[in-house]
Image (cartoon, rainbow, N blue to C red; front, side, top):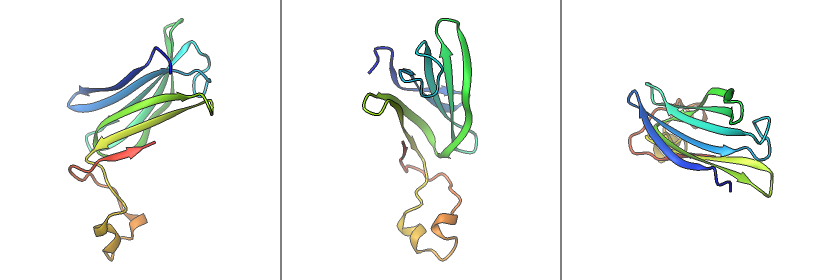
Length: 133
């Protein structure tokens, strides 16, 4: 891993939690050069939706480029994430966890008559831990 790597930072912004991680995009996976930092942000909105944005920040020119913005990840709150450069595949991997998520595959959801599991509309469930990668 890179020495310029901050991990699992969580901050509160206007009563909403923001998780972020910063890594050098060694393989130009999303950024245009190795002089750019890849910044991943996960944040909850007022409806308990988790969204994600990716920003490339050029450390030489002090300019940034938003690669993806407001991508819906799921429901929940308190997101936390980590990025890693994988030397075997030359890719960047992201792992995200959040509380108060939703589980499609649960006893209650599997046995109810309606809606079917795949047609469920996710809603935040207190204390349920979710992960995405």
